Amino acid sequence: MKTSPSAPPAPPKMPTGADKQLLDFALSAELSVHDLYLKAIDSGMLSADEKLVMQMFSDHHKAYAQSLNGLLGKAASNTRNEGLYLTYASQLTSVQAISRVLQSVENTMVATHTDILSSLEGIDGATLVASIITVEARHAAVFGTLPNANLSSALNSAASSLAPNVAPAATTTETTVAP
Amino acid sequence: MNDFNNLTRRELLKISGLSIAGITFLASCGAQSGVVESSNIATAGTVPPTTALGQVVISDTVLLRTAASLEYNAIDTYTQVLDSGLLTGDYVSLKDAVKRFREDHVGHAAAINALVVGYGGKAHECANTRVNNLYIDPALKLITADGNADAARDVVTLAHALENLATQTYQGIVALLTEPRLRGNAMRVGQDEARHAVVLAQVLNPGYSAVGPTTDEATGKAKVASVPSAFGALAVIQISLGAANSEGAKTSLSMETPSLNGLVYDEVSC
Image (cartoon, rainbow over all chains, first blue to last red; front, side):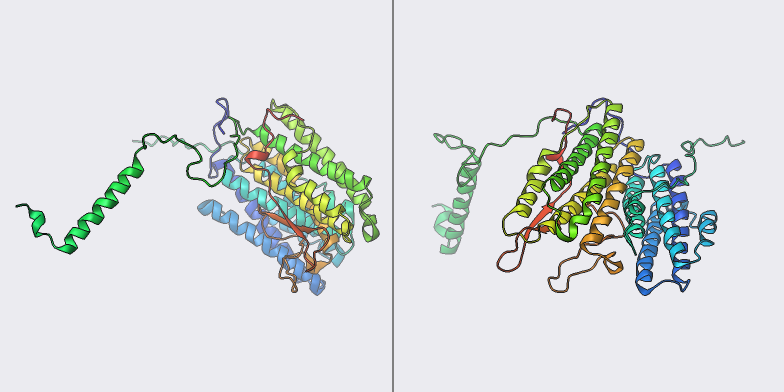
């Protein structure tokens, strides 16, 4: 096994400055989704079985936020995305709405993370985000199979990414210090 | 008169022992005259000749070609399932889902091969031979063997495993792809495979209580879960298929994502 002489240089392991901005956005989105699940669980509208699943999904999103926080270290803002939270929180008005809205949220997170992944340079951030995408897609599909199986609902997603435009790589050039 | 006359019996034995050990050590280090060197000298039986992996390059296009090959494994398997009428009884209603999955895999293969060509590679439009030989062919043989009363359910079990294998393959190559855009494109397909896996998991083990990981109390084995873990795993996929033996146990198969000897290198063609 060898690398091609013309192969591009190996990508960095740790997140770059631009990666950190994107990963911090992902972190804030995960905190919002976690809180949306908590609101649904506390609504008093869910059955015990539904609560069990929502609690598990909520815990997953908390784990994603914690993992992203661990990767970002001091660069993590650790605040939820208020815009995302408020957009969906007011729509959690019935059991059917909760299921539909949270599925939409999961699909949106898949689209957002996939978009972010397409811009990440660092391998550690990319592998973490990839491992989140597959499970959030599973979350969305579960809402399409329960309580009643609906193949299109489980497999199709028209969600758009919320990811911000990728900022150019952060420069490290220091400003001139006055004598 | 030399000093040896003053040695005690214990000292003499000690010197003799050290001498013998030293001579043995030196003899084992050097080549012996008149002895023909043999690669079999330290083995029992004959070592079969091995073919070393040639100088190969694991490029982004090789990884994508490998992913494309898995799509064809899925397409071929679903085609065989539909053509051979393996979905029977309660599972007949799954035909539409299987057709949809096959269509999705056709689309995935085309999308991945378009990326391969776009990055200067050659499209790979057939199944991964090693995955067929190691996993799918033996699985189908077990499923279609005489005396297997669970053939239809076993087909769903195999399909579920293949979807998980594809999901893991896409997730796994993210760590190897050098081009960020390709990582995103890989996961656009990978997340689709994960959705397929959930639909099949709910057929095998339905209901809310089966969404997360659970264990069969009777066997102690993990049950099929729609969402088996918080993060996408890259682990061996174990399935049990075929007619049960006298103790009620089915044959177990372990599946892993393609490794060095299962990648579709640039030299590999259909």
